[in-house]
Length: 338
View 1 (cartoon, one colour):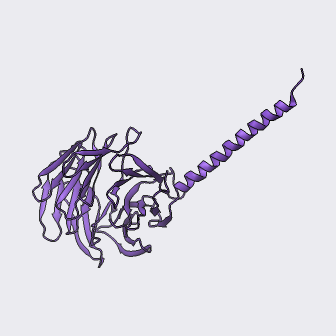
View 2 (spheres, helix red, strand yellow; view 1 turned 120 degrees about the horizontal axis):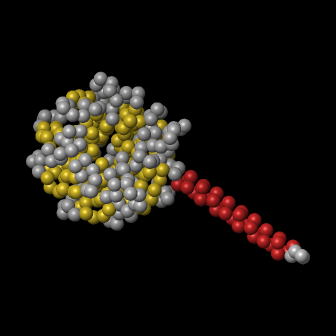
View 3 (cartoon, helix red, strand yellow; view 1 turned 135 degrees about the vertical axis):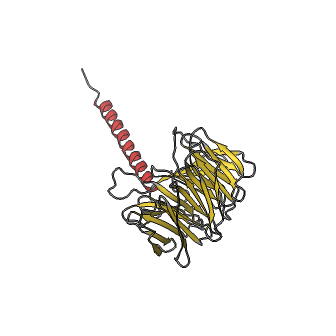
């Protein structure tokens, strides 16, 4: 049998080139994905990891609680410490929030909360709760505090006047709370499959958003146009606050998606979400379509390799800012994600 050496050489050459092109494309994709998950800037805010974080509405401040029993308020313009606080009986601070006007900070343990004056750094109140532990907190520009509790009760109280009401609209554990900047309206999500938008003066429900599973996260648009509520499974929706009607649902493939942080963009057209699996996503409000995705940085040598996004905000310049359980503040640019 006579072999055609020319044909064999050509075939080998073709196989070699196909393999080479595949390796080049794979390398390019790996580099691209690596770049897409690389923030523009990263700062360490809790070397041993964070327990809770909040970022101000304008992206200028970050409040970070760590396992060292301290709470640090960071200036995000130059990465300097503005205040370092220790709370009450040195219990772990599991919840943090900042008022939209950057006037007050609130921190909470299981059964007590403290409010701080951001300008002076002084403590304004340290209050212990009775009967049930805290699940989530929020604070308004006027000192109104909203507290969601394990027993299904939501407490609304002003730290200056002492005016207090208990909202009894839910009948199971509260998982997430949000409040308007002026303290007048609240959005609460619970394990009773409902998210309720209600008036804090009258405790009357304005809109009721029903989910097929427990509601795990809620958020309000600072411009008072939208509400967001997410169930423990497929339904995560954006609602019109005036009509109460659904605008869109976030479009994702996975059967369930838990959101640990939610924020609306400055232009009121997009939504940012953070998840326990390091995922940072940007969504179109009108359609619910995903626009971009990034992965935040895990703590060095962490096992398993994971991180929970605690807070998201957008700076005045349009940079997306995240704080995560890794203890890092990270800055992301539009158009740099997947």
